[in-house]
Image (cartoon, rainbow, N blue to C red; front, side):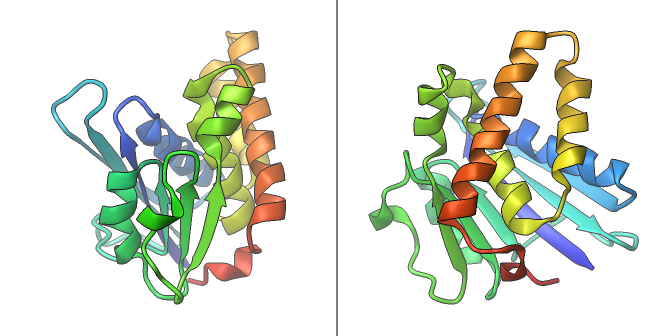
Length: 190
């Protein structure tokens, strides 16, 4: 089994943290993992993406030209990475910031729209849109267990009870929305 993902958005949207949490949760479940960040020179507002590969055997390369899964948080990421998802894969779209007209037409992949930024605003913290997508990702792909995600959140935010609570709420909301908006884990096959 090997699954690969590209997670992409603007700098400041937390896509590198999103990828790192997925990678750490998978690693702590015993999987082989690679996490490769890439970002522009800007601190905020520039581009950022990372690749995550999760496998049950050693990973030959962290480079992912055709991912099984793409999580796109903005229009440029949708336009750049949406076309690269391998047939039979999953394109997970932040539909608050990416209108349907900017989602590539891909009848060969499952496209799931999650209004992550809107949900984060409703939760009172626009910065947790990445955590909404983390919940949706974990639910839809079954690549990482939700319990593992919860452990990583506790490890990262353990000393900040209010921040931990907010992030857990965002992840849980992402799961709930994905349950109604998405398709089951069988969408993404190794």
